[in-house]
Length: 222
Image (cartoon, rainbow, N blue to C red; front, side, top):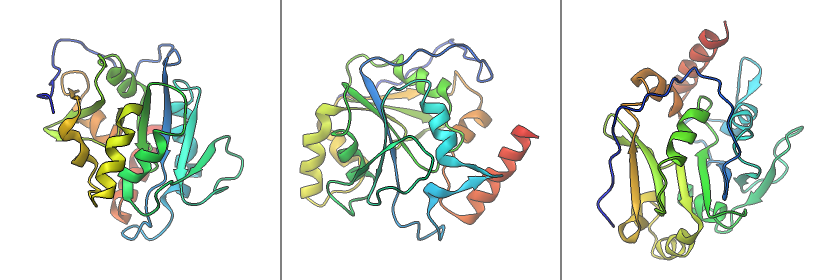
């Protein structure tokens, strides 16, 4: 793996800005349906925040950037009234890495932007910031406060064979196949506030996480 590129600088992006986003060329998106939600106790893909389903919030974010959006899951026809194509895991029960493997074979484009189904505050600004830093790398993911977010980022479709090899070896950690790939870690700390990034990367694994998400959602739309 090439030494990661840590991007810093004076570029300031206003997270509250509402400028027009153009559809990203040569890229599509996939929402990973998640596992059995043992810690949370119910299907995270069907959760709602004050009556708004998280899947709808995500589609509202991704729909302005990608012409193709897929939902990767073992369960077809999970959603009602949602215009999204569900793709069954090609290799079931392999966790998020198996979901990424399926996602990379689902659409058209050099890159697939992936995110988990339980990230209600993911923003177009963050996605756009990542896309603007792609210079042919295989993997482009964000980093904040020293933490890498491998489940939010762009993966080149050419990674698919290496992921298959990793899964055959029983390696299910997302970063298990990064060793031979060109990876760029995009440091977003100089572009967004810590509070903004905390929300953007927030995922709901427990009831406590859900309670915090509801509080933030209520504050945002109060």
